Amino acid sequence: MILAQTVLATFKDASEKLTGHRKRDFIASVTEDYFDGSARKAETAMGWNRHSVQLGLNERRTGLICVDNYQARGRHKTEQVLPNLEADIHSLVDREAQADPKFQSTFLYTRISAKAVREALVNEVGYSESDLPSRQTIGEILNRLGYRLKKPKKQNL
Image (tube, rainbow, N blue to C red; front, top):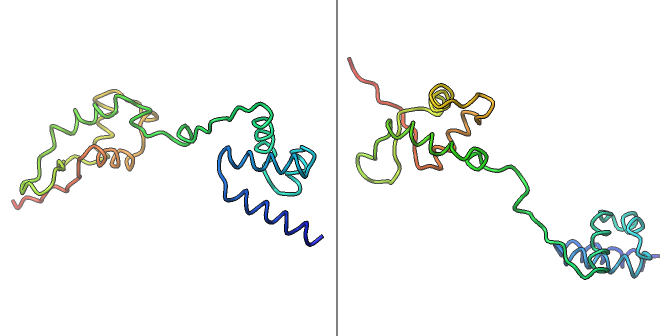
């Protein structure tokens, strides 16, 4: 019994060190050899995802390896979801932007805030409130586009 637990621990350790199709191939091999090819038994004994075990068994049976598409996961950047947003922001912010007076950086400084840019996108360009990202995201987009927000200096009157 202790030997069986040691072997199971070794299998778990080995499977954690592998990724992708190599991991699926390993767990499918263990499932075929020790669990009669049953994904449910492997899931119960080893704690492996039954669907991953079944995919590994199918890959071994057919010889075809399924390609993992990790790049398609997650949330896309707002510029990809709204392709015209970048050009619209440039058209609004460029008229308010100025270069660094000391020419120490390549950033353009702008006096318009992210909140004002968002409001201008709604009022002047025609975006709806629900289509646009939050004020903070607009600020991050401005930073990615090379703009830095700078508070206007107070004028002494």
